[in-house]
Amino acid sequence: MAPPPPPGAADFWRPVAAARGGGWATAAALLLVAVSHLAVLLVRRRLRRGGRIAQPETPAAAAAAPAPVPASPGSTSGLEGLVTEDDLRQLVDSLGVGTREPEAEGWGHVISKGNDDVSYRAWCDKPTAGPPRYLSITTYERCTTEQLRDFYMDNEYRMEWDGTVTKHEQLQYDENSGVEVGRTIKKFPLLTPREYILAWRVWETNDKSFYCFIKECEHPLAARQNKFVRVRLLRSGWCIKKIPGRDACQITVLHHEDNGMNIEMAKLAFSKGIWNYICKMNNALRRYPQHRSPSVSILTMQKLMKKVPQDLVTVMDASLPDSQTTAASDVPSTQTGRTSPCKLPGKKSSRQMIASGLLLVGSIVCLSRGRSNLGAQLAMAFFLKKAFKQETESGSSASRGKTGLTRSRQ
Image 1 (cartoon, rainbow, N blue to C red):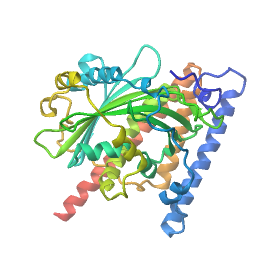
Image 2: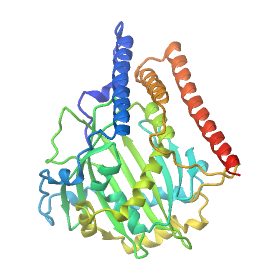
Image 3: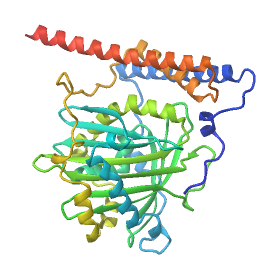
């Protein structure tokens, strides 16, 4: 397991010394940063409307940058012990909860949403110490398992559609074991960028199902840098299977990560933002077949992918039965019988953007303080209440607008 990250921005999310005036200084600094970010967003939005905004760096330009040369494949450099078949066995056993009723096994329900293209369900399990674990089941219509596998593993393409990923580089791989090590940089609002040094391995079954296990590690080609916060814990795994009798496939993901953020703030960000992220991911998936030739990530994965050991196939069939017989495989219909459409980007007004930014700052200030006095608790309740109220009102307005449009057409 990786050692704790060096002192830096990660400590911002933990209790600080109770110095006089520290709370007001933190709030003022956060407010200033938030206002600056909002001003930049407003300026960019106006420039986009006028067609004068500069385009981001193209993938071709990014590919022209010199990339680190991976260590020679096939070498016995210790990579074979980073991700093993025992990790796969534990992953299969852990993913089995998704085929049953997670709530009955102590998992708290987080979200259930879906539309004609994608459906999503997620649960949360809070250990006695540390960040929570998340279990999710996502179903993609009109998609093959191979397409979904390549989409998930294409790190170069992810940098094009996922705004949080700013850099990815391959560090080393081992053809004998199938283990690959890479380095990824992610940015988060108001935080120092996070650095992930990860090892992963992909397995394939005879029926074109796929398994992947990912974990944090250290590597000599990735020295620590003060400008990044090294993520000290990440254990993640997924299974992609075809849904029998349908032109659809399903991915079950188990994710456990400690990136230094305040736990309550991270939980709030997940529950309020994950559906928009799933919609963004689905849009990128639909564009993926028109993407350019296979990237380095995909070519390497196809070369390293191993077959699932035969003695595990029976266990997998018992742990992950056909999705049509699984209670947790599809999003149940809501009481109104409606699905949850993906929100169109760029539809927020300037006033809504400023209000959302101020609410975010207020929540961050309250959650980043290490105190538990009554004032902080009341402030936290106020900001969260306003945030939930704002989302409910915006959703109701959208529904009323659609209803009015339908009636006018009739």
